[in-house]
Image 1 (tube, rainbow, N blue to C red):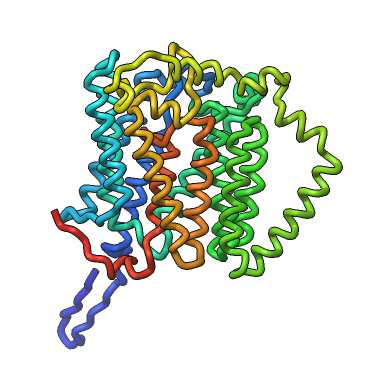
Image 2: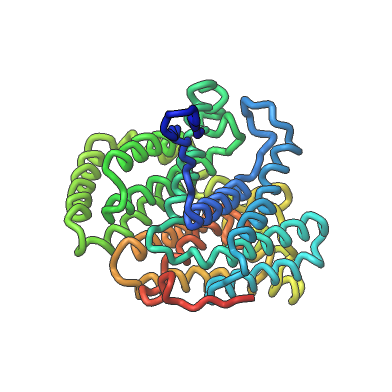
Length: 420
């Protein structure tokens, strides 16, 4: 505000009050935030809403599904606002993913439950499209998508912890920890916790995450993982971290120290807590149940024995909810075979092999280590979990691994983009 004095004999004086400064956000920062928002919306989209699971908040099933499914449309809208004009990167992985999505759409035309199959196939196509539009940010040196994904996982784990503290009896249904605020089954809680632990450890080993942050993440996520009593996520996480750590073993002393400490802890734990570990792994099941893979083997045998035509053998029966006669398939490879046939299985295998092979040609460092962790986790988990052939956290994380396998010469600012 300006005040001027014009009285006779007085000098012209001006007093200026300091105006409040407005924080100016750079365009690059705004673009980065919108990219992060689009990725978080993809994470929400793959968080399937289970209205039958016990939860605290009175969220109607229709509202919950609208939130999760509508987030894909939100992600597409956000990414189109930031990717103007539309720019995409050439990628073998994206080409394979789009081919799988189109193949699933064609196979779903002949599905028994037509509307459901076409909806899932269309969702997979939209999911692949959003990932394709995000390719200009795949190769950022600051690992934007990896850090965004980790923060999203921390947010999910926080809701699980809060739900456990507010209603422990509801959260520990059947003695396995699930989401009580948002209905998340124990197997998915275990998946989110295991991936969060793995990403945290690899980032810390690479020197990209502070010790206090990494320690807090692990201290919170490990008990959550153990309380879910999910063996697949634990084994996949250990395998992925081991492979990622070995890729950094000769480059960083903290990795060698961490492996030494890990060997000592494992040895002491095996000697002193062997019975406790065996009880946790058995999960109250007898030898017959463990041999039948908790009933999975009967479902798998039924899928393989089902009569099918040549077309159904090659292209499947269309995208389903990954169940067979009301029972979960719980195998990515048999679920993919049932939905999109041998062609879909071949495309999925090539996608996994592409990320795994390309990771070995990436220079030693955090990009290769993170990619190896993600692909190793997905491969190990794929034998008893479904998800690499549909819009799921597994496919999202395999794509995250694919974003890390570009060579240094193709980093942002050096690789030409395709305008469409």
